[in-house]
Image (tube, rainbow, N blue to C red):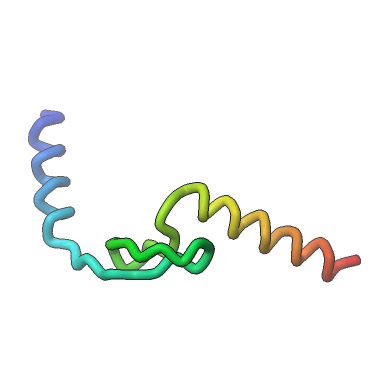
Length: 60
């Protein structure tokens, strides 16, 4: 049963459009689906911390 789901998931993933994007944090070009914004989890965390810091500074 798991093999069937895995195969279906792989087929669906292969049909997704892949775009060339640039990470807004580090500027690295990468390939990803439309939703993907950052190239690595580390860049995603840096962006989150930066946004949070800006909100805290603006609130004070």
